[in-house]
Amino acid sequence: MLNLIILLLPIAAIFLMFRSQKKRQAQAQEMQSAMAPGSPVRTIGGLYGQVKAVNDSSVELEIAPGVVTHFAKSAIAAVIDPQEYDEIINGRPAEDEASELDAEDLDLEAAEEELVEDESVSLDKADGKPAAK
Image (cartoon, rainbow, N blue to C red):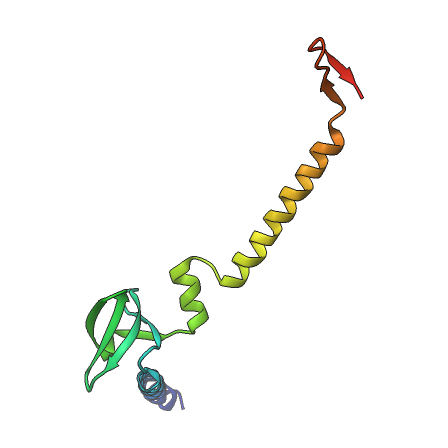
């Protein structure tokens, strides 16, 4: 019985390794078929760009305005969401920028109101001495 377990254990491990390899290959194939012109992608080296053209074995990526490079399809690590791409390239999503600007405007208005309300001392023009209001 023990000999049977010792024999079956390596066979089961090999089976699981082949199965996981097949899953990874299927995912890579699915990702490569999802690439289309305009899709934002990340390469295995961590370079972000947008797909300009998909050929049989290569992909043309625009990595900066007017800069197009050629990569092997296998060098593409992931097709990413356009919003995630925008967050990475621009530093933050557009919604955060708009809400942050609105918050800054509100903070400035509140600070101005506080200064006007808290100003209890003004200079008397006649003698230059502070006079209480």
